[in-house]
Image (cartoon, rainbow, N blue to C red; front, side):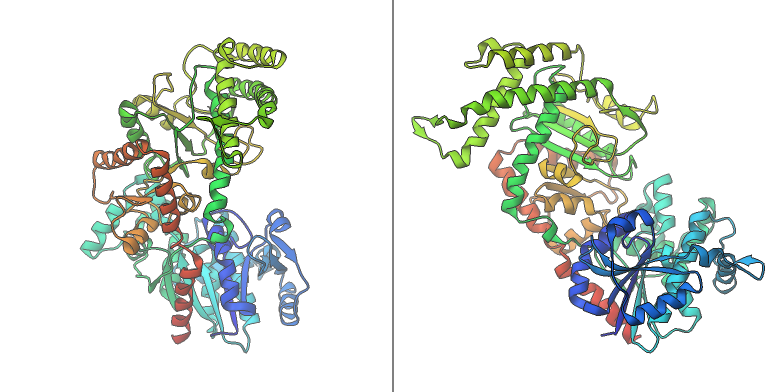
Length: 617
């Protein structure tokens, strides 16, 4: 198709947002499809480059181009993207270039002046990040121009951040064909965060045949970014968005309809097959169960066996992410559930630190668990019988041992160890004394961390909906207001490992340009809930139709009242909470099957089509 294909994004080899996931996950299929012609151009961040870039000797043409750019103050770091299937990656440091004084002015200020004179992109009041990205992306355009001399080339630019590079090529009358993709408009995302119900405004505006008032961009102080997006969408040879939802948003916000939808996908080789996921689920669930026993047993007895584990995750956008809906539906479930449900809210917030009592409990229960394992595992050489017949030890022994561990832990916690049929006196006594020191009167805390603010919207909503982590509550909640990662002092697991341990991921977003979280959840064999106001929800409805009995559910939220949405989600919760293990496993497998449709092996065809369209123009 072409000699050179460049993909330009500040998140190539630099993890700062969701576009990193898009580029990383599709890098394998891009290198397969375009081979040596494919190059990524990103922003040089020294700390990221240490782990993301494996430096290589530059090939002749790239070396000559980079030497020329170096004389201008643009420094190119070249190599393989270690986290991106070893795709060829060039990271640009344009600091010297943009800050050089030319005719008494900084070069970047001259570039911004040119953007105003040619395109009326107003950057007078824009903050430092706008200036930084204009300088970097302009430098990326210079690099593309230099490397593409005498060659058939395409340059694909992502978001306003790389827009100055696209406009540089246009200004130079370059033969390089351009593609511009917006993953969510800046103004749309900002309005949604502040006002909510963006898609209602978009739908109403498009029905009237109107666009957003440009003064809205000035109101929210994003005018330069908004204008950059609008101009690039209009000037690119091909303008694409990642979903039907963003397509509508772009039409209304930017005044330009996309020529093509290029859906986001995943590289499923990173998730493993169903048997390996099922095996790891058992292991990860034990880790989460141990955390729950640590968290709740000092307050009252509980049993996690056969409980339903549900979660929501994302930014702290209470209504945008549907956190309010999640909590209200759980409140209704708490009044009717016949099964224990543990609901996790993985939403980072302002925190002071881990609650002191939680830290204390973790330390003590770790010792107790070690003692229990020493006691229980002495039985590993015993033959376990059921109804007089030996059980397949390879298949069942770990589960039997786990039941023994839980029974012993609970009996130690409530001081009923005397009723246990076997014991190691020294270890049991030590563990019992430790638990006595942990015993606390009252209800378990709702949050693992102490919050900066005395009043927190999530905590207040949980309490308003009768979710107080009382002993009698069927639904118990753990608000985990920090990023999940190994060494976080609590779960000490990666995000994917925690998701792997869950049964159900719930994402009732009112604004979600794409939505990787339900895809990732389903890929790890969780029943998942998405929204018809999300890009992924629309993708599911278009490809599968009715999702009401499938492993991924789509809440029909468009045009619905809050009460109607809560009723829908409660219905899903209620249905799933009554399923037996085999029924739930069947839905989990179906979720994985559906998620596999969102695979880059299949979706890469849309990128190929975008590039074919660019060449034909």
